[in-house]
Length: 123
Image (cartoon, rainbow, N blue to C red; front, side):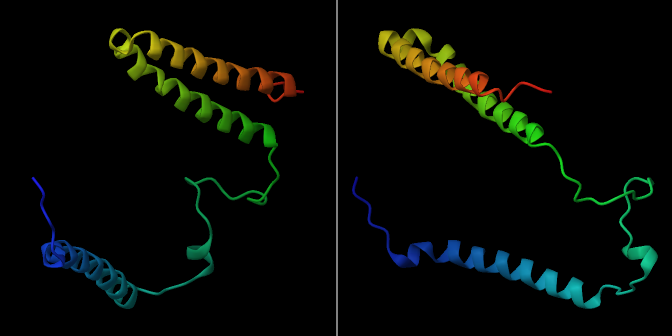
């Protein structure tokens, strides 16, 4: 079954895309133009759940927090790859098992590197 598509076959998709983008742009322009524009010191003041603002929002934070978050996401995503492998364990056979051993070896070598670098050590 060799089907050829003509440019006219994509016309309904292009029309729908154009209408969607047109609607978005028109809605943004109209709401910007007809919306109220009353600025005041009280209105422009940041509001955080009723708690008065204290200090600067640009206070330095230890890089350790960001490293822990990134490592969590990295290893969490890696563990997600294990679920389909476990579900299809029997059908993948020895080749699938060896691929997972290689995957886990690389994952654990990265974890060992992180431990040796002292990323997870807190002072």
